[in-house]
Image (cartoon, rainbow, N blue to C red; front, side, top):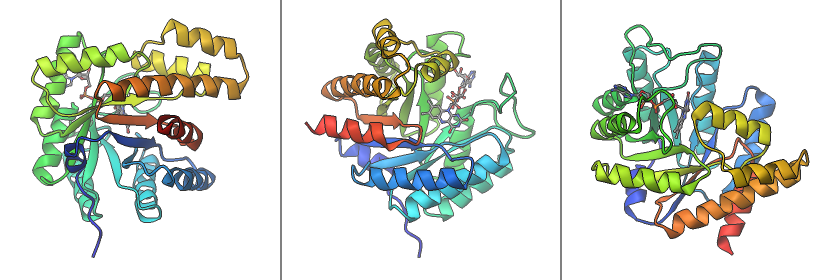
Length: 293
Ligand SMILES: Cc1cc2nc3c(=O)[nH]c(=O)nc-3n(C[C@H](O)[C@H](O)[C@H](O)COP(=O)(O)OP(=O)(O)OC[C@H]3O[C@@H](n4cnc5c(N)ncnc54)[C@H](O)[C@@H]3O)c2cc1C
């Protein structure tokens, strides 16, 4: 008998703030060992669930399944594997959905996906899907009891022609059966509040979980923000520049910023927070301690 996860929609229905943490599958065995250590450390703060990203290449994909199995089997976390449309036919996506379901997972983050390394643009696979709303429909049709999360973009998806068009697309994903939205990372909470307000006006009523990333390096955050269209507030930039090349000070600035963000988000009714920790435990532990105070 396999263990079957609870759908996250049941947890959201409890109306208490949920803490979730995102992992990415490491490239090699040493990385997997490091991830085990991170997972063991994070066990202490009992995240409500963890998620595992999905890469564009074949071996990366295999690793999503492996890492999800480790986090579920060895550490007992409720795990939400991500799945993307990149490079898959409909038949392959249906097969992956069946496998995920058969293994007892009941939650999936359904995404279009980023283009593989070296490609400038997303391209549809032969007999594949173009948009995440199509993936939501396929998964719901194939395995109706999967609980699906989708991505949302407080500062607009970089390819969307306008915030209005982007919102319409988000609505398509929710109408197709997504149970909640997790946002792209942002550093300015006002962007999140405005986004939630616009969603509610557009009758998108599902939980919208803010995505928060404690900064680990200035270069890295500049790369991320330029890639995903997230703004870097001038105050945060000044603090990171003042921290210079002292990594422990940069990290402290990053944790302090995230802590201020999360306190405000929870005080203003966010349904929890999703942490982008880049497989490092320290910031998540520091934030949990800071929030407990
Ligand atoms: C929480 C989260 C987790 C992520 N995890 C991963 C991961 O594991 N692996 C990975 O590769 N990437 C991941 N990403 C990145 C994501 O794949 C990219 O942002 C990607 O470019 C868009 O994915 P999406 O699912 O939001 O796409 P979509 O919702 O399909 O949107 C893509 C673009 O098309 C537009 N659009 C959508 N539907 C339509 C339509 N019907 N007609 C016209 N235009 C439309 C949208 O406005 C948007 O500009 C994640 C992002 C988030 C927010």
